[in-house]
Image 1 (tube, rainbow, N blue to C red):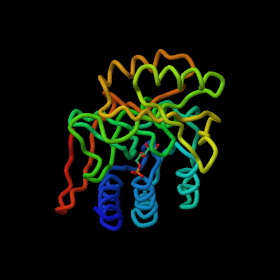
Image 2 (cartoon, rainbow, N blue to C red):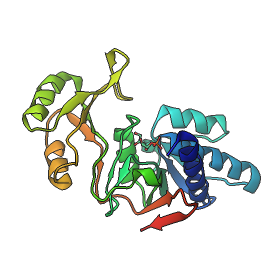
Image 3 (tube, rainbow, N blue to C red):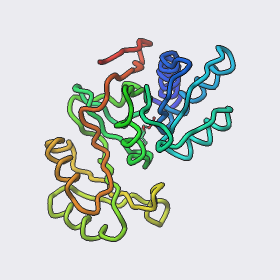
Length: 229
Ligand code: 5RP
């Protein structure tokens, strides 16, 4: 699929998700190129349908800037209790709606917003669909203090770690940490791996989003939109 076609699908699915948003909601807004189309569609609904949200929280400075540019006030997660709905993209979605996220480096905020939402909807084009989690490196955000040890630990576990780079420097997250992308593909035993990472000191968060997503809206290149629950 070329980029023009993929962007067309991303826009379609983003507009569909924007129709799910109701005035009075507390809305969580994710990060990424698909979400950027969703934010545009939200702006359109605000101007054309008078959409008025109770609050919006978001998962990156990029999305925050775009939302504010369209006249939305963005709150901190700490200022709300729970979002009614969070709409986000995903890098891979398996048959059981488990996902790999964090391609844009925003996994920690994304998981924190997701877990504090009543409903989580992912919007994707069909290229993100897989039977089991595979085809995309698994991001792991690590504290700089013990990152070298954790990198070696992942090597010894056969997880094929690679530093995420930003030019010739290590990529730095919103929280001042590094990202190690695990290239083990397919993701071996996702729940076991998530458990291992959750219990590794120095790992801040990882991109395995398991048993979290309630609904995935998928744009297919044949023009259909599929809703998976
Ligand atoms: C960012 C994410 C994004 O949701 C994911 O990378 C999908 O992005 P895109 O819509 O650009 O393909 O997890 O950390």
